[in-house]
Length: 189
Length: 303
Image 1 (cartoon, rainbow over the protein chains, first blue to last red):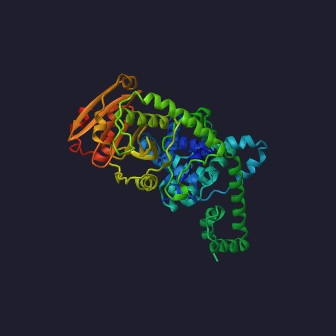
Image 2 (spheres, chains in turn cyan, purple):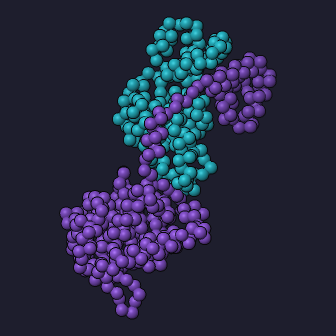
Image 3 (cartoon, chains in turn yellow, green):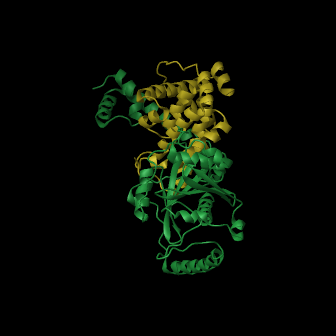
């Protein structure tokens, strides 16, 4: 059992992660209303059970794990709807070099443009792959934490990370090279 | 030394800092010898850095933050150990003097009001027996205070053992709590409250969004519950009902919109407070079995 969280520290500790939690909730639920409910439910549950938090471990990871569990258990209908729509998996292609993407990105002087393209490319990813790349490269969790959050083995995290990063590079590269199919998909994303 | 194929498999774990020292050194050894892999690693590192600095976390809607801040927070947990017990700050000497003065003033006023209520004084004892009205009222006031955030638990935990250990240190009578939650209600916290010179244990239970308070104190004399109602009493509560069930006399009253069920057995006197009668019945299952309706069969309908 952990040493817990003092009441007076809870809000300070938890509210700093509201943006990240909301982002993850949106990724899980795909809808704003559901995402807000999920964040609120997570917040309440964390408040109730923060004596189970192990001091010294990653509090943010603990919140994320709780959120995913709530999503599976309480929003199971929504989880089922989303999993059924995710039947198309990204195929495991050969290694995609980032060279083309980087040189194209360098030619775009405005950071905002690359950022918008990146967001569009991310949105082309299936939720499972997007989840790992968001948790790793945006939220900064390590492999073990991601595995715990998503409820899968570390090997699966590594495999999905490989595929999602590869897919991202390929999507951006194809976009910059003006391939019509990728461009059409991204611009409607 | 690793070959290029192995290096490609270790590309991301290396860049993500997931390899141990030994593996990292072997990767670096290869990179020093292989310009192709070194260039791949360099480009990947640059791409990941670009990605991390460009990717944004969208802000949560402003109304969501407001929503979270406005949520009443009934239960917050504090896990056990002595050092983590939530304690009230020690008052300063000026604070103590002010508090003492206020307390004396309130006691004088309360004494004038309570003078009109029936009470019995035991011969040879300085104890004051309480009527159901006083117990109900006091329990409701504390329950209301906690619900409105004006009062707080002294200790907060979902573990009955933790609450019990702490309460036992404060009380002057032995206390027994149910060891496991047998209903959907969860223990959230405990408090010691003074009851006319005595101490009582107050426990908070919660289910979904509603709360039940259980007050436990030393057994009150049976005649305490037989006090007559006075006109002044009628000002304080809307309804009152006596219920006999399995050789125990229960009193159900309603005070300021809250229901209070009072009774005494061989061990303790109890008050159960909630905003609805149905929740009182549900709360009985905390001690008397979650789904075992036989134990309190028929009691619900008597309330």
